[in-house]
Amino acid sequence: MAQLSEIELSLAQTLLITGTLVASSIGAPGTPGVSIAILLSVATNFGIPVEGMVIILGVDRILDMSRTTVNVTGDLVAATLLNPRVKAHSVETAPG
Image 1: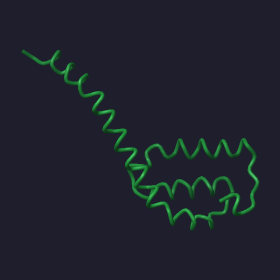
Image 2: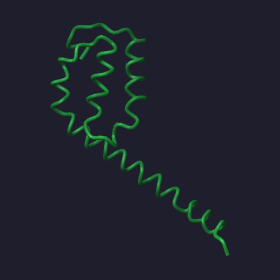
Image 3: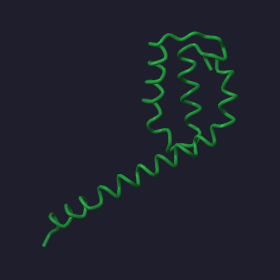
Image 4: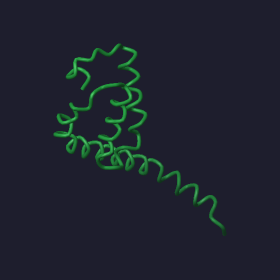
């Protein structure tokens, strides 16, 4: 959006925007459409006009479904890896 508005960002600004978006979007895959709100908020805070958001809105639904798929897959992998440890712990601490 900054390039479309012909705004030059320094390397430090680009890294700060990237870090801010990554840090603020950790919980975003669980909530449909919240990535747009995060992006608008960050763009506004950095003085980037949000009129270019129209381009992103066209593909956001597909990207949102992809992020949700990756999030759920990660949750399933974590649950699968932790399951044997939880079972072993519950057998060891079971009364009786």
